[in-house]
Picture 1 (tube, rainbow, N blue to C red):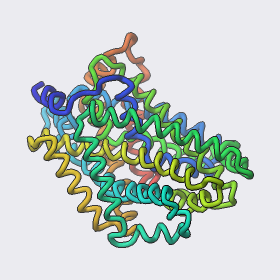
Picture 2: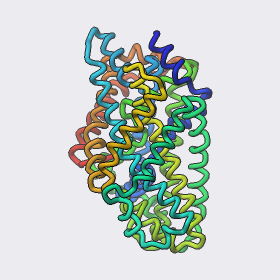
Picture 3: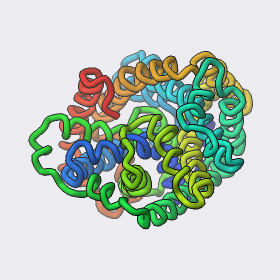
Picture 4: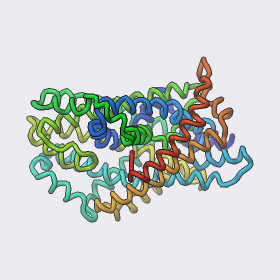
Length: 443
């Protein structure tokens, strides 16, 4: 219990349920919602894909996200301390080692994300000055993605994230997410409305929404929907645990988890309605990944009246999504340094920021960064997610975690929850890991 008091005393606690939810949504909403989700919807059956995706979102939100929130609130610490606690209940050692695996995953993603969000910051600046629209998009992107090509932007993003974290949980993480996340939704809604009036945008809506039921018979549709849902909610065994550890004991965790899942899904859909119809309006390729964000869309903005303003709104909203995700990744790493090495919060944040920037400095070259992110997202992160699912529902056990899940609820969780958690969710987590390797990435 001393560890519980120390964690809450040093870093604080979320001041409200909505603040916690917005922070969790900020962690979940990332690049995958913007550059991958819309493309996959269209490529794997439109509305047919969405039905499968919604089913996985419901399951992973209710069981996976709730479990990680509850695990964090039970232990009041991050993955290293939480995994260690779970194994000790069985008289076993090695929890700290296992907990370090998802922690490495979070740090690894943060390193790559800092580079990508640095690109976004540069594009935002270029949108405001007009330099981005005045330069051919492929050339503009290539200027950033060479060896040491975006050092100042990369550094600024790391510093910005560290500044947010310096305010602690309530005055830093909660306050910033309470501004950035509503702004993200408002900006993307405005862009989606503007895109709606573009000639030819209707083809993009058809791409997203017309159901192609034959895709339901293809295994790839189910695999990609599962992977997109799993990684979109960030049930990776680290970041959501740390946010759960800062949650008030009176809050209804399953309700908060489902609200988070709903808002994350709304963000992905909103991004789809803003991005894909615009791409189709100008007859361009809607392929996913960095080319969509940094090459295709700038070409679109260059042809839209007041394109500089639309571009600035777009990249500002993407910046918000990237920074709020990075805040979570930094926080879980900083908390580990605080609790395990007894460092002050300021020292821990500086150390995390220094490692993220220095390692990232040598992989700013885009092929290196892509390879780095492939290794982290295909192998490390999914394995960490499997570990977490097994540890919560099998090692710690359903009886212990269910007490935390029922805290703050008027009606206890149903019997199906236990079956879905222990057998369906854990099995699917293992399947996500296997399919991620087979398909070389599904999230």
